[in-house]
Image (cartoon, rainbow over all chains, first blue to last red; front, side, top):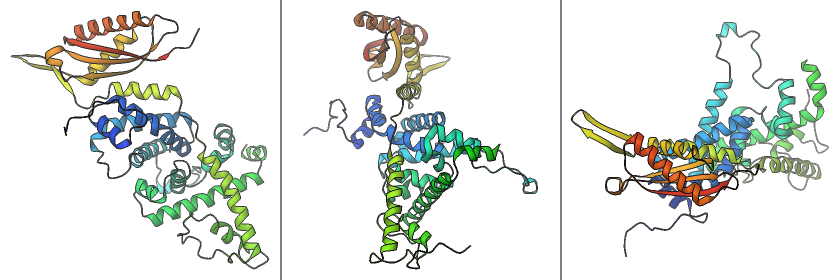
Length: 202
Length: 187
């Protein structure tokens, strides 16, 4: 038996492990297949975490370029999807941080605006990302991210814990808090039609 | 404010929240989740809440496919993200000149993009394995302009890449594979 590399062309049926190995040796074709396989989930997670199409595209793009550059560091201890989601969330967190205004001193905190989207932003968001998307934007960040990994990326509880670097119990707790908060937001929205909400904010 | 109670006396919010615990039931977030399956009030509320959640979960699970332009942008950025491969272009008493794979890919991409009949350059792969013996091997992936003769465009790309990379990097270019994977939209 020979130890030579198989000279077959990778295809859609080739497993992640094989494609990662080929990509690590510089095979861009193999990486392209990995992109086609994993980009829908990564893009969906970025879209739901950021609730902004342009930012989500930026995060997705950066995730795969970073993965291509650092694929040599991927040891296969976790699934490739877990590793990609971790890179994606790091990128999303940077984008969210960039959106926030600079910190102010505590003695100047009076009159500081609420960082959650205001009524007019909510109306615009609802138009852009739908009812569930705009309600999701109002769920606290930690719970929102855990919820998105579970419901959008369809990761198991263990994988969510792995991506976020937290315990399984903490992951379960965040997902539960996310679900409760999201239904609360949707319930509140049903009691408060958009026109009334916008008028109140005017 | 007093909590809303079900006719059985259970706190409605606790029962509703309990219905949303992770599917394996191993969550301690809501210690008091109401009465067991024999209680019709708690069971009805749980069922309603789960149905409400199912609709929201289906919305969350729905995925819009990433736009095609995003794929193009990612693949194009990979062009200039070489992972350390490089080749010595010249060596002399004053020091050597080294060109990174990413630079060669970028040069080839620009040459191909300027060729008539090319709608877009989607990727360039550089193979330096036999660069010393037979020259740098390149694979250029492009989208063809609508209704342009394929063999002539491929020949023009090979010529442009060979001249451009050869002149700028002063490197011998060996095999140039051209792959058409897309066609630009009709006018």
